[in-house]
Image (tube, rainbow, N blue to C red):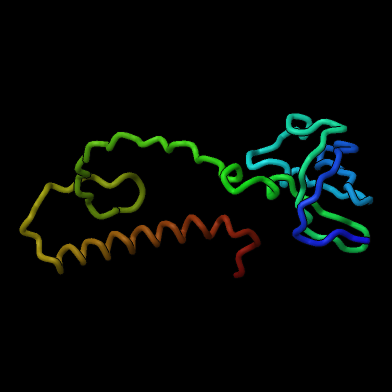
Length: 154
């Protein structure tokens, strides 16, 4: 008879594998406790948490076609299930560094900083932005044409 899903049973660890441990249940039969269901922390080696012959309490997760999946961590009381999160490191705030204004992009090379001017109208700023972005896009398209592969058609 297969155990009821959700029931808490006691069993003995019969063998330990890399992926989990097999547990012989008290009513007969056995099941697998997957490595992810052993503890609330990261389990690199099952031997760090279980030994062969150890008695454990398990919860039946599923039972179909003779395969029984078990969990040790879900059989723990609610208080023990919670894993305290490590405190997050809070970095000190960085001082704000003003960035210099950039001159429109003029083809290859780096853009030179513009002299600061607060009396430039919005339309002028927009024109500068559009002309610099068009130049950047033209350069980008030119450089990407050679990387697309294949031969050019004539």
